[in-house]
Each structure stands twice: as structure tokens, then as C-alpha cells.
Amino acid sequence: MSKLERKKAEKSLEPIPGEPTYSDAMRDLIGRRWGAVWVAVPVAIEGTDPEGVHDVRVASRRLRAAMDVAAGCFPSSWYKPLHRTAKAITKELGEVRDRDVLIDALMTDRATAPPEEWPGIDRLIARIDRERIEARAEMERFLTELESSKVPDEVVKRFGEDATAPWRTSPAEVDVDVIEGAP
Image (cartoon, rainbow, N blue to C red; front, side, top):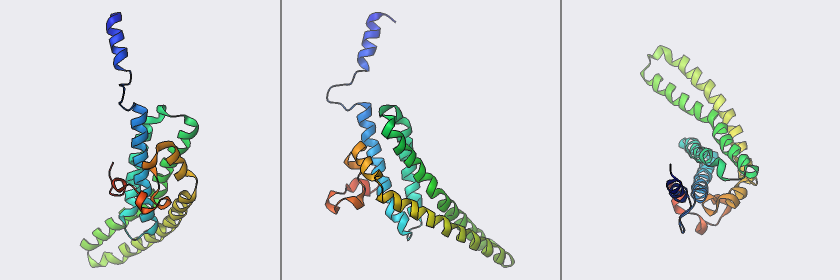
């Protein structure tokens, strides 16, 4: 590559005036991803919608994917703890979600099983449901502690207003796009 070609290539890597940098774009994306997690958390804690836990896990996996890609853009002193928190959210909800899926599959199997197999399937469902109740109590504790921790404020500080936890704002301040699941 000639010196002239190299100079042109180097120039093409420079930020374009008025355009967001990669770091800015990732900061915005991660902020929106955190916002989606925060919107889903209260539904998971409430427990009336079985998809609540699933929605938090999906949002946290999307958040982790964005954070994995952007790790080199931000100082590790504050980024790594927030990245670990994103991973912990996915992990902490896994036990409940796994049991939700297993119970659903067993209920489907029971519907097509011969009646003589129902008592065994019912006992298995009951045991898994007891495990789910225990896992759910642990998940609720984790999420409640997370909500009241400094993490939501730290996330907003680092990633902007799109990362605001809805329970920490007035309804007029909540971003409708985040609530409706955008990003």
C-alpha cells in the first residue's frame, strides 16, 4: 500500500464531523437496552404474567450482547461491574424460566398421556413447581435488591436517560419507545 493510499485509509477511520462516534452509538444502544431491562423487571417481580421472567431474560441477553461488543469503548473500572450485573440478571432468572418451560412441557405431555400416567406426571409437576417457588423467591429477592441498589442510577449516569428505570421517574418522563419494547 502506498503512502497516499495509507493516508486515505487512515482518514476514512476518522470520525465524521456531526456524526456519532462508535462509542457514542454504543452508549446509546446500551442505554436503551438497560431501559428495556428496567421496564421488564417489575412484571417479572409481580409474577402474574409468566412471560415477565422471559422478557427480562431476553432484554438482559440483548444488553449483554451489546455490552460484549462495546467492552473496549469504556473504562473497565465502571464498565465491568455493570457488565457483570447484566450477566447476573440473566443467570438469576434462569432457574425460574427453566422450570416454567419444563412445567409447560409436562402439562402438554400430560394432555396426550394415557390416564394411568397422570399421577406420575402430576407428582413431577408438583415437585418442579415447589422448586420453581423457591427459585422465584430468590429471583424476587435479587431483583428487588437490584431495583433499590445504586445500579439503576449508575446506569443512567454512564449510559444516559434512555437507561432510566421507570420506577425512578414520573410517568411523564418515561420513554414510551422503551416501554413498548423498542430497541
